[in-house]
Image (cartoon, rainbow, N blue to C red; front, top):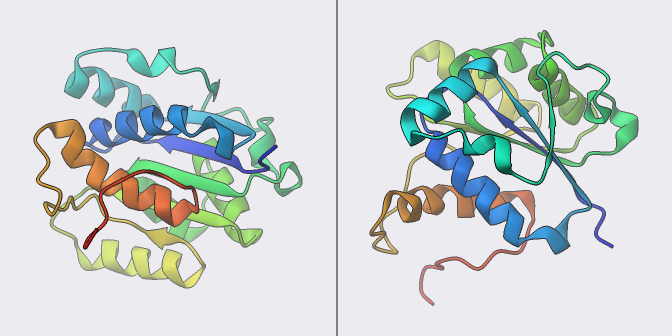
Length: 187
């Protein structure tokens, strides 16, 4: 059995399509992890409902934790969650992580992943970036996190919003170390 234990956090940044595509792809990769846990910010649910016109985030067969539940297993390094992806990652969440502020389950889990030297992948979608954003990204990168901007590619000639979002999500899945069928340049 695969020992990957993954936390997926969804924050209130615009870009719910990225979270949906990530969750849909992870369902298909279930042989590559033993657990997936989800945590949503309040704004994430509101933005999902506005952008995707549904509340399907409730229908995934992954355990969902409330954002203030510090009893969630991934709030401690002893639970051995080894991958965390925050998708999309708001600049406020990114700033709190960069500053070491663990005021909710998302930022606490990110702090745990970083202190345990495990894989933290943030998918920010904002543009343009201020110097504060760039410096926060630098801080997280220096601490071992990976910034994977939601900047889609067009090599694969995506035809739908989901295919376009998948160009970012496929990279994030690669960065997480999971095997995934996706477009590969030169193949």
